[in-house]
Amino acid sequence: MENKITQLRKGILELAILGALSRGRHYGYSLVRTIAGDSTIDLTEGTIYPILSRLAKEGLVASEWVESSQGPPRKYYTLTPKGREAFRILEEEFRKLAAIVTNAQNGAAPDDPGDRLNVLDISKESDNG
Amino acid sequence: MANGFSGPVAQIVDSYLARLRKGLSGIPARDQDELVKEINSHIYESYRNDTEGDEVSRILRVLDKLGEPSEVLSSRMPEAMMSVGKKRKLPFLILAGVLIAFFGVPLGIGGLSAAVGLIIGLLALVISFYVVAVSLILTGWLSAVFMIVRLFSPGFLDRWVDVYPLVSDPTFNTVIYIAGALLIAALGFALLWLGSRLMRGMRFVFRLLFAKIRNWRKKAPAGGERTLGSDH
Picture 1 (cartoon, rainbow over the protein chains, first blue to last red):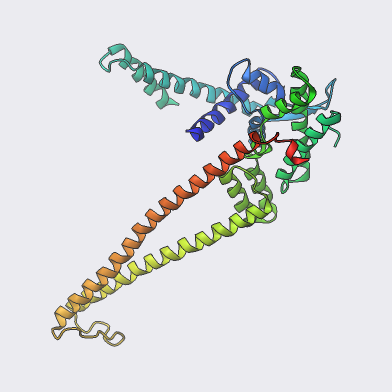
Picture 2 (tube, one colour):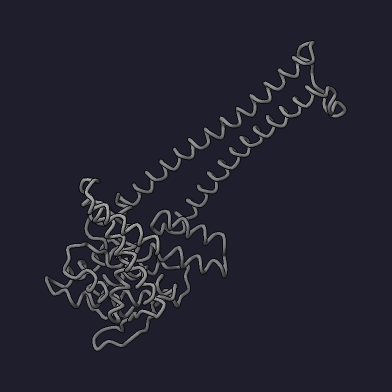
């Protein structure tokens, strides 16, 4: 089970990182703060770095070192055009998937015509994707 | 190493970064420096934003949130090592990368070579097992076919093969041989089946082992004093 949670988290974390970067550049620590917000999720902060380096390797993010007014320089990450496109596609897909999970849970009586309509809609959409 | 801290806090950070760097040996020095610098910057920013309590408890909290060096590395290392491997020591580094991906923790060179040895040994065992099973099946089928052909054209390949007459009736004799050949093939199949069972069992044992190692590594820092103290 723990393994499943880790996998799910890694995928979503990657999406969240792309999302945060789509709204502006970040260095590692500010990225963690932005993603975690004041939520109670216990994010092991170090896990974002492997993800960032993979995204960089895939050409989805670019990075540069910038001197900080205090302390050591920070490595800032920005989304490349390719990364922006990847985020757009992934976010759309994520929305669909989230809707599927929600629908499955709400899943009232299977005879409910409204419900059935909903489910049909989604399967049609994901066929196009 | 200058890390922007002073006193005991600097020592703790140094020790953490040293452990991180140890886990990075094998990837290009430039990449090592870059990641260590980045993590150092993270520690600095995190420490600056956490103002509760004394310096030491602050830095320990910061590092606890950051996670063990293995967590900062674990999913990066195999890739990094793979890309190095392409240039230089290909097979060993790829194997090591795969191993680290499996174990989720850098084992150190000693542990790694022990694990590599163990895995190669097991692999050899598995391969020889399957070779035996496959050759049994091949032998069984080939002899069966050979015997069936003999059933219809007696004397087939008589020049090369000497079939010992177990019973006086040649047809019945051939049938006995066919049964024997099929039995051998069946034995081969039984071995294959047993092999898949064994593999499943082995995988189960391995997974159990990995889970144990992982849990043990997670629990280890909690017991005793603190993670970072132990490295001094």
